[in-house]
Image 1 (cartoon, rainbow, N blue to C red):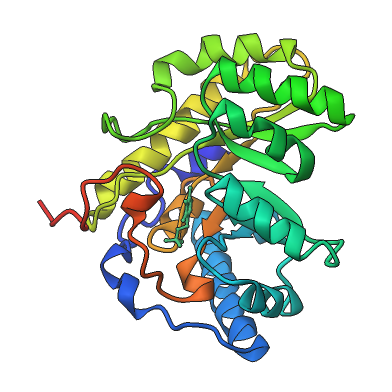
Image 2: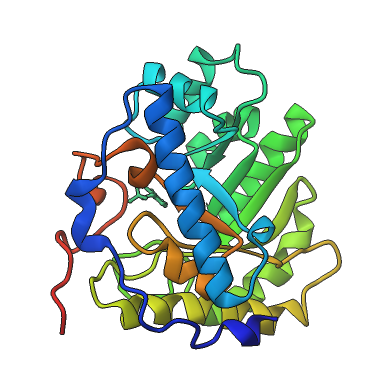
Length: 275
Ligand SMILES: *Cc1c(COP(=O)(O)O)cnc(C)c1O
């Protein structure tokens, strides 16, 4: 199936140059409208790629968003929330323990001293990129009697500053993961290069899909590599055209964020100009 995505709709632009234009949601109605707009774009991208929209999970990313607005998003239908930083996520999880159907996904780099917190409350961890973190998480999860869905983060842009494993290191890494029985490996995750130049963004997504397709044939028993978490507010439509099964969308749902992305992952700063 993935072959059919290759080269799909090469004209789809990124929207990385429009980040200040996403409308801020302040009411349940605003959230419903923003969610419906994202869902419609997901459906259109699936249509272009000949995919079933049911294959794509929208993961709303709520970093920097306060509790009151998160409750509105939940009322509008958000059942999953993604957070980049563990402390922020834990604070919110504790404050909203009454929303028992809400599931939390950690999508940012993890230090081993935060593994205990993740093992307690997270349903998913998308940024696994070291065996030290795998070991720490597994130990804490065993102690809690829990399991955790995980994605292996891959650096597909080749930027030295980005988190994630180099693509050529992923095969050996995945071979080591069955040792950590509490980790349910679901797939791969990446952040594309942050660029207004769609072809460079698309190349990152193609790299992740190609890697997944290759590794899927040799994964150890118990390891699933079906999922591809890729695409954010500025580029999720391109990611879907290239096979994303999870898109991580914050600003297009909650509104433009004033905290710069450099606070969450190393970046060069602004959008790279067109070449
Ligand atoms: C913030 C974040 C996103 C979402 O970015 P938006 O521009 O708000 O859509 C996706 N993935 C990760 C890892 C993030 O930290």
